[in-house]
Length: 184
Ligand SMILES: [Zn+2]
Ligand SMILES: [Zn+2]
Ligand SMILES: [Zn+2]
Image 1 (cartoon, helix red, strand yellow):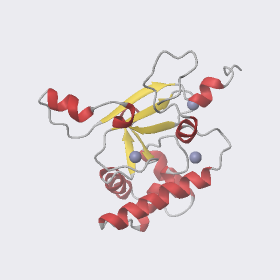
Image 2 (cartoon, protein in one colour; image 1 turned 135 degrees about the horizontal axis):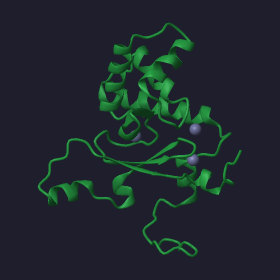
Image 3 (cartoon, protein in one colour; image 1 turned 60 degrees about the vertical axis):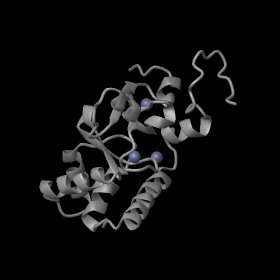
């Protein structure tokens, strides 16, 4: 049985477990090297398990995404890479992004036209929910079925064949919500 949320009226907040919430929106100053290393290691393992090749070029793009939990646009990826090496041709970055997103190693945040490294072990086809913080820009990723959203069932009931499924929710992350309002 789930512990009750004090004062809460929603009983289905199965993600509101403290550790899960901390993993979703880690505080500023957390050991992000560990997060980035996890993202890279998981991508390598996924590629090994599925016979995919994480070429150096693809890996560099993923590394550029894994620098933070905030989405990065293709142009900024090129800028990031150009700081530490030869400036990549845009087409190679776009191709790498296609590979990474098609295989679930990174995700496109449609609303922001930007990309994040995958932060959660999951099947590439699993429908996801992205929680987008409008203040700090971090994006948290949760599996839709883990929060009670039945994408497949909903589509099946409507006779709709989904091609890709991701929900994007805008708001304030727990870190920003707990911080005093930023005033100049
Ligand atoms: Zn981190
Ligand atoms: Zn993911
Ligand atoms: Zn935030």
